[in-house]
Length: 334
Ligand code: NAD
Image 1 (cartoon, rainbow, N blue to C red):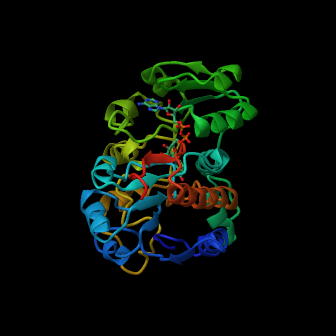
Image 2: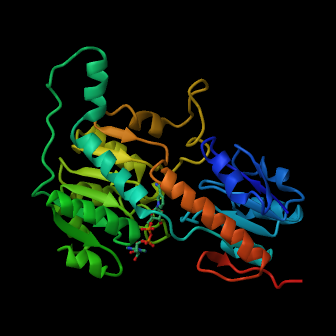
Image 3: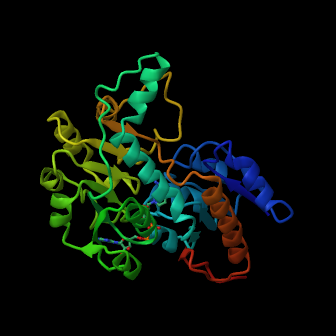
């Protein structure tokens, strides 16, 4: 069996080849799956895709017409996949429901502390042998209040670090996580969380009910000097509204690892051609904003676990076995 893997970063390629070695052939492509690249999958029963792959109706139909019957998505989030259409086309879809939550939680903290302590500005100054401290004033996290929006696996790991800093813990979720309550988290409604938190970090999935959960209303409730971090999904934040608030001089810092229109930009080198996205172009100009391109998960630990689970997902499909990773079950076996 030869498997076609889309959207493979150069760091990942040897890991993927090693993980599949002795089991299946794997052809790794650096291009992402979309309408233009879907025809490459013709003849491949199993393909593997990465975050930001276009697995909407049109692409799924092209894949099905080419004989693809199984999609092994190498991410937790699956908001990019039209599961109803996949089911109608009798395609099995599996994702990676668990991998190191520490990768994302630690990166969310990396962004929070980098904006708080002005690390980018400080490092670029010292490269110019400018050793002044003006404009670099940060603040202690100890004793301040953090609001964690979504206290599942990643939110809990993020909360444990906040607890280590000695912060007051506020949480908002549809279900309370007893481990967070044990750390001293107080669950409140989201309006209270926005109003009282010095640092707000987003860890809910992107769903119709969470789309633009950080819109104009939420933003105006936040403290003028709050820090906002999004390492979950871009669609949680109304970016146009956020740019408006930043233009008004609000927020101590904003760290974004995800962006609602990131598909077609993130993971690609656009440095020579530039980008046709005025919102993102404006966002990266604010001195108190850091944008990274969906790299929170990108540690050797998490990537290794994602690949291992993907190999298992392929084996489960071939054996017609179920698992927690299956989003759309396999069609009946031969
Ligand atoms: P999880 O399922 O363990 O936790 C999600 C939490 O959100 C749960 O506690 C759930 O109850 C809560 N939730 C769900 N719907 C909600 C709603 N409508 N309102 C309020 N709370 C709601 O997931 P996780 O592993 O912690 O991952 C969280 C998200 O992080 C993923 O969905 C994904 O979007 C994102 N993520 C980002 C990266 C990255 O590299 N930037 C990597 C992995 C995951």
